[in-house]
Amino acid sequence: MLVLSRKIGESVFIGNDIEVKIVSISKDKVKLGFEAPKDILLIRGELRLAVMGANIEAGKSVKDITLLKNLHITKKK
Image (tube, rainbow, N blue to C red; front, side):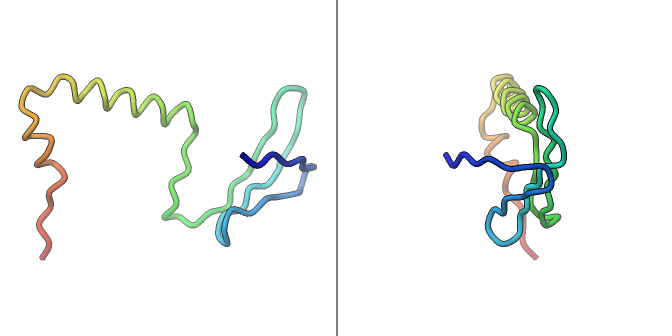
């Protein structure tokens, strides 16, 4: 893990396409701004964990696993 100190207005780049900018700092919060290409998924950590948990629970309710295996198959034209 890389740990940096930044001031308001300063930024960090991830690769060539993603910029993380410090927007504001208060007592217990730091506001970050993200500039990234539209094809890059940006999602909050707690939301990602919730979706993963919901997917696991949904998978438990499927009786026939072949239904799940066939969901990802798409025909190419």
